[in-house]
Length: 115
Image 1: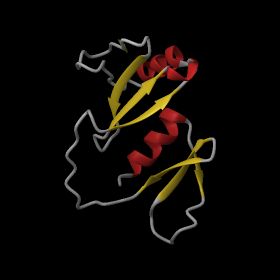
Image 2: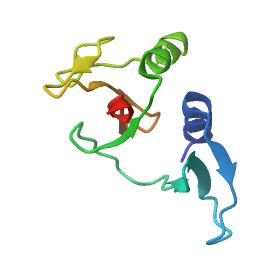
Image 3: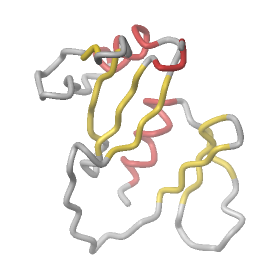
Image 4: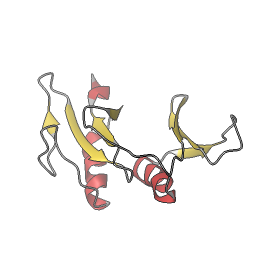
């Protein structure tokens, strides 16, 4: 895990670091709210192959503000088909955008929280 990955999740999502109670490893734990955690586990020799269909998804009440945050941070995002700087509205009315973390894992942000 690059140090950039850790800071990426802190800066983009404002996740706070919490204690790794499982081990003395360099795995970093972040609180993502409501008792949920994201564990960033370093595997420097791993070959990472990503597929947009396999992604980490979060919902927010402040979808437009989050998309603006991505723009301000110069983080490229797209809709599901892959059109850059465009959000997507699903058949059920939920808006979503997709982008990659520094290790190229896909992340979806949507406004399903409002439903």
